[in-house]
Amino acid sequence: MGAPHPPPLPHPNLLVTFDLDGTLLKSASPGGNRAHKRALEAAMVDVLAGTPHALATPPAIDAVPHAGSTDPLIVAAVLGRAGVPPPVVASSMATILDRATAAMPAAMAAEAATGGVPPTVLPGVVPLLAALVDARVAVGLVTGNLEGIAWAKVRAAGLGGFFGGGGKGRAEGGGGGFPGARWRRGGRRGRGALGGGGGAGGGYAERGGFLGAAMRRAGTGGWAAGFRLVESPASGEGAGGGAPPPRVRRYANVVHVGDAPTDMKAAVDAGVRGLGVTTGVFGPEELWAAGASEVLDGLADTERVLRVLGV
Image (cartoon, rainbow, N blue to C red; front, top):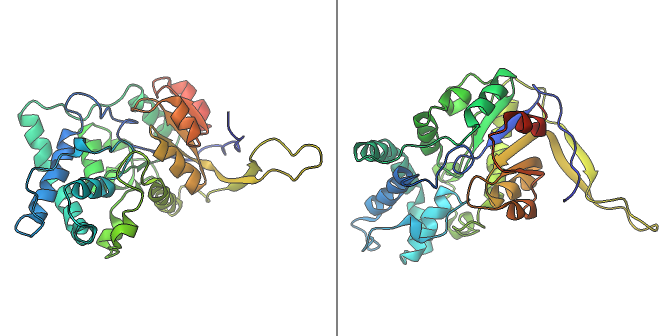
């Protein structure tokens, strides 16, 4: 099932990054992720209010495909559906992202006050993270959520103690990779920056960049000597004197765990192993087709997951 991949290095020289929604948190539960959506929707309304492109009707994130996407791509898709011109989307994006992050605490408080469902941790997540941290494996968060929104959800779910960086955890290294930084650096590149669409198929190359950011953060944290790039055959050796098969270059000691094809494509793009889980809305066939090194039905079987990770 797919190309063979290099074995992982022994921990502690191992980095495991996790997607958030559908991987660590049950985002598809009734009311799940509603505070996150409210924060993004309110920010779009607020930023465009009083301009020629003010939204005539409240934006609805659920009206666009967004599983496996990133917050900036989701915003672009929603505003595009509302007829906002791409240059306006691009010039407004940084402010919308910052406003959404600032609005997240109030959105979460409003959800709690009205009986909304708080972030729900999926089965097996807590014992797995505990086992990884106890084994001195670096863990990180790599998600399409904006960084401030992601950490707010992680802390609300009681998982903050497992992560380094924004999670204020006890793991050595960790941290993560998130969207939005290019806009805050002034990299407002219009449609080029938002390429790939807001749906489930968009944004995997950008996610590969998030993985690279997580690796850079972990690699400078003093926990590891570095990441080992190795090569393996992409398929069986050439037969009948034909040309040898292409080589696959991957970091043997980095694994990204996610529930969406975009996560697996991002892992391939970043040169790391991808562990797919079917706890989101995508099936195993879609994850294998996107380049997963392994696919599991979830993270509930801690020992099995640790074996797959190489711990």
